[in-house]
Length: 178
Image 1 (spheres, rainbow, N blue to C red):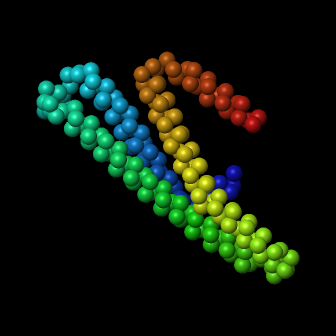
Image 2 (cartoon, rainbow, N blue to C red):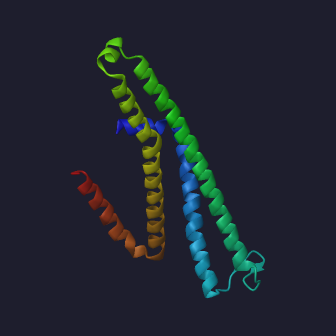
Image 3 (cartoon, rainbow, N blue to C red):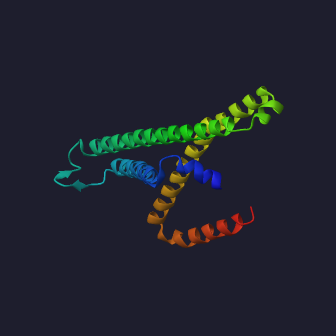
């Protein structure tokens, strides 16, 4: 667990993670709103925003396009933020790894074949540079999707809060064993 916390601290600290969370909230909010707006558009519900009403032919498409633009900008900024964090992390990890390797006693290099050192070093850096950021990005995207689905479900059906609390408690109870 400490290794993951060190890995996450290299991303840029608390401010970085808060901004990353805000971007995920914007993206999920725009996604949910665009789906909801599309359903309003399909039903032809009469609506009014400010002085603009749904009687205008451009009312639904303009708001939908604006929502998609917000979604695209959110995704772009989130991905740029993620790439900046991954680049920071990789820089710190590579420097730490090289310091550890260069700080090793000479006896280590005498008894360990250079091919073995190179193989282990490149395999571990591949996992840290490519696979770990990919898995974490997938984890965060899935978590954000799950949270937004839960929020929409609770808003649509407030009675779902009780089973949700029971499911979360059961999850944490079972996770203690595994």
